[in-house]
Length: 387
Ligand code: GLN
Image (spheres, helix red, strand yellow):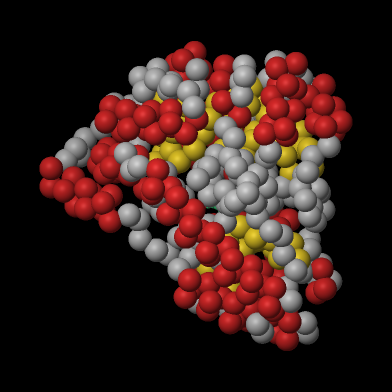
């Protein structure tokens, strides 16, 4: 048989998704792939039940149902501090995964360069391969995950088409400050590059940190392709509802890319989720209160066990320091952790360009009793993993 595509020859499977399968195999508490084990808001589910009988069940408009886009535009205008046009500045996608891929396909030609901060969310590597982009990595150095302005400017000097900005960041929990975003914005303008954002954790930012949309900075809406989703904000990761917000000229092309990739996101789910997009500010405050509590419960638990960890400013991931185990392979460590301790985690090396093997990622988007069970199991980590 002839060879499969050259493009995919460098692909491995997603380690994040693989660790969910490993966790299932061993009955581990799965803190690897980041998704909740609690229910979405009741109002959304009740609307979904009605939609099951009343429809719609056929394709929505390819770039998103009118009702959904109007609700989304209203919500994002409020949070981004700029009027978003529901008809001209939004494409609804199948999750932010498609939003990011469509954004890359819209902006990038094969061999164009794209700046990626390291550590980075696994999919960006695949997005670069599929779009033919060449990533240039700029390190965010643990434990504070700050970047060097010189290193960033050096990367911009090679004339990248775009920079990918995951803010709040998965996996390191960094929330870029306004000043850091101003530095990135100034460089993007100086070197005429776009910024593609991944802001799926925009509503999970712990005090005193605050989320700034880079698109809201002066001169930046024009060159920012903002990608996000409803997955984390409304606990509906399986619904695959995401979106791109960008200037009309970019959206015009993104609409076509999206149309040919997937035609459209699920119509009944858009209809049901629009209820969530119309929630008042109280919903987002309550969501943050819950995640703040989970973060405290989990981080305090780790402290009590004497396990070193990062302190996330946003999102719901924490990186545990496993240097004391001196292990050759963090992938093997995570497999053993699932099997012998009963907790699923993602090896840190998946996220870093640099050779870093002493960190593993866990998430705390779980019910408090699930987190407590994970902590009970982690109590035995030293004894079981030290042999
Ligand atoms: N964003 C989540 C994570 O990093 C889930 C990713 C996914 O599997 N789509 O674990």
